[in-house]
Length: 102
Ligand SMILES: C[C@H](O)[C@H](O)[C@H]1CNC2=NC(N)=NC(=O)C2=N1
Image 1 (cartoon, protein in one colour):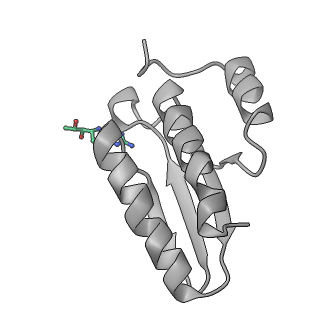
Image 2 (cartoon, rainbow, N blue to C red; image 1 turned 135 degrees about the horizontal axis):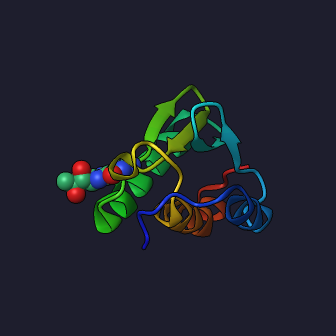
């Protein structure tokens, strides 16, 4: 099931395919992107939000001057990391380069 918590090994396997993403304390799949300025970071927030609405799965988005940090787990799985979190991360990765994200 997509909203079953992943085992440590399943998580490691998926992380290996997603450079830049890591698991932070509190079971959060996270990545910080850096942009050339503020507005490109804001545009990324809007794009990520559209993806999240499509997936009905939502990360915390923390916007800085030229940074955006995403942190996500699955509330319906008790705040654990599931396949849904990696699906969202993969979708975000697919558009990040187009926003000049590093
Ligand atoms: C009712 C609605 O389907 C749920 O609240 C969705 C919305 N977005 C979500 N986002 C995240 N990260 N976890 C969830 O379990 C979740 N559930």
